[in-house]
Length: 395
Ligand SMILES: *Cc1c(COP(=O)(O)O)cnc(C)c1O
Image 1 (cartoon, rainbow, N blue to C red):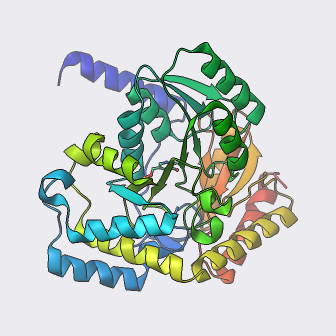
Image 2: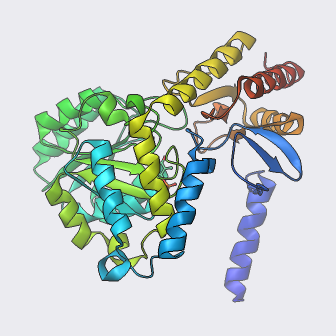
């Protein structure tokens, strides 16, 4: 190894370890279900994004196995050579139906999708108005485009309006885009899409909503854009197939000309191998299941409401979430880490999220209830929260 690289790595890794910021990754031994096994210990799992429990759904497992038998384990090429199977075409038709748009394009991940879509339409002569709390993949996608990035205060519509006006009136930019998460995953709050659309109309902005945490969860399962009835108003509807949908991948849904453009100009579509047949088949069936029945969606919300009510009754600060995402705000960073570690020791897997992911002094343990949690699991989790909360003087 080069000496300069070796020194760089050792110094920086040591720094992180000294500050307690080096993340040791726990391997899950078996499926990522409502209960997981780590280091041989069973834990109630409140950390996955598997909102509807579809990652371990028996029907989807069978659909994936059947597709593997028929198509093999890999797509064999990028989409534009011969990696597009009829399965991918069906998936994209299903995605358009799911999102209520003319067309859709799928990618290998949600992260990849933001790398692909933003830079396919925005360039150095453009500007992007970006919510301060947008996801890392949005931030990186914006950077890749070389457009001027103008961050606005989180969900602050006055700030957005002022910055949109200034950008428009400056005459410096060809195109201006406004970009936001649909659901913000740290606090579980929902973007103010009706106001964003109004501001976009006033200043002729392109609208881009990444609803990674909304699809399957809000809008009776159809997402945050649908929740507000704005399918016709949002230019880019982005989503992931890896959270509530339970598999892997990402997509853009929108007008046909937009999707046609992305198929010829978005680089991960052109230069990275297509998603595997088993995954694509499972995703397509998962979308159909979400459209056919709200049963899993309803169970998710019931579980979310139950957990929230339980934590609140115990005296915890659960913030102002509008979705099943349930932060339990502890405050101090060290105490938050200790709290999370004690939860694991007692049998609940819920991750500490601290600065710099969230502002200093707002460290929290974030809970992600899912549809396949039983009342008994949630009651056990609440009992453990009560024990640890009293022990550490949080309640
Ligand atoms: C999780 C997330 C992504 C990444 O999705 P993957 O499919 O896991 O790559 C993108 N955008 C937002 C807003 C997310 O929350």
